[in-house]
Length: 149
Image 1 (cartoon, rainbow, N blue to C red):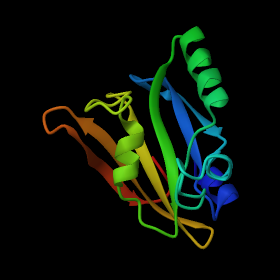
Image 2 (tube, rainbow, N blue to C red; image 1 turned 60 degrees about the vertical axis):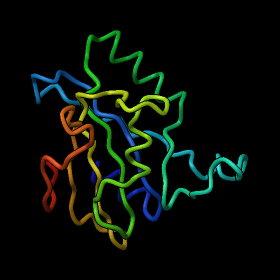
Image 3 (cartoon, one colour; image 1 turned 120 degrees about the horizontal axis):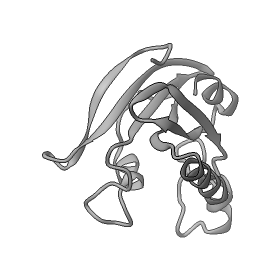
Image 4 (cartoon, rainbow, N blue to C red; image 1 turned 180 degrees about the vertical axis):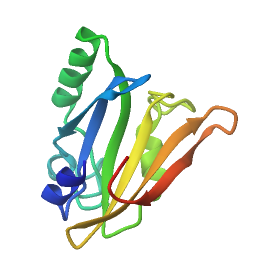
């Protein structure tokens, strides 16, 4: 995740974490292409953010990773993305993207969402968010300087 954020700077990086939710040693990070810029160029009335302030995971990659996880009987453990030249806060856009088709429930209620802060090409910190079903919102469960846990 750290290297991916550096490679993609000044744009946001994004990716998926698969593995067993009960076995941290099984976790695998899958970097994904951020197609936000292409979407903005093609559909500017629908996608107003560029890749330096937003991300959209390539749907083909998303489906490939979901299929791989299903075949290997692995969980979708989490998702990650970076905030270039910003802190690792949970934004309204992050919340919207994590929700199931405009509903009040997340697509993956048990998945972690890691936001990586990167300034001027150097990763500074991260925050990890989880869905709190009682509060009906994502709450920060952990944050700190790098390296990521």
